Length: 340
Image 1 (cartoon, helix red, strand yellow):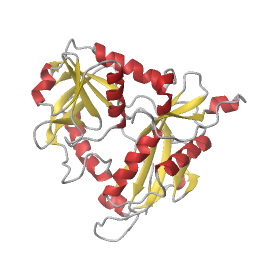
Image 2: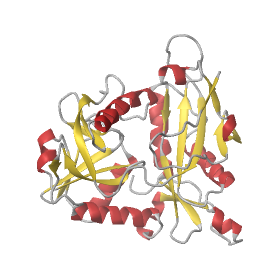
Image 3: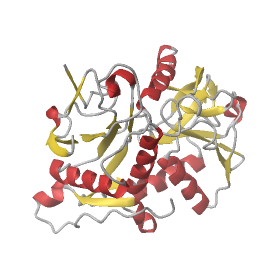
Image 4: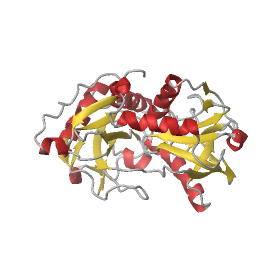
């Protein structure tokens, strides 16, 4: 029995149709042929790592702007090394595969990429090894409401570094995220914030978290059992460039109740303001000024309106530009992003 690699995402604002081409088993194939044996370790034991990467249609429609592509694949390779899975090349080679897949799929709008490295072995019992690798794509909009979330603090705790490291996107660890999200759903909330085993704030179910207190942007440190988020890192740099004071430290649960602003950030969430925690209003109950300014700056960057941060974008010609016969920019060579 085979399992399709590209599984429909329940509840997400995505098209039911994946883009037609995937990269699987070291070649480009129709997405319907990207399948795994039901008995393989990736399916049975969650022995895989993944990445979520966004490509945004540029403001002029000429390119798909893939956000911080080298940084995503650098983290991806690091995550794979934790479980001894070997992708088919260094981050630069994986990035070139993604760029070529984009050309073949010729998207006309915003897209989401899901690279996956996994243990394709089928023996009974878990063991750390593997060299499977795949990427698929789908058109995507907002996966998380952008106009204000009502969240709770979950009764579940985040997985610890000495159990399943949260800093890597390890597939099996996302059972923890699913438990947190289900806790929120059945309780009538949009999402949940999860604490680590020390009782300190870690992150949301599948997104990093930042708060504002007294004009200072505060976020849990990467040693607090959180994902080392690419969007998180980018927003911290933007905040510094805007003159906003930064603190990376432990965050107490009750700081959530007295924060002036709270927002979630990540590839999926993008930038999602939180307006209440455990039914306590955050600040004025509306997205605050620092949150709003950071969100505007971030969206200007990904749409190609901020030349200062052009190094964060890998540009691939969009379908509309090619169909119109425009000499749209050749896809740029993948280089290390500035400010990483």
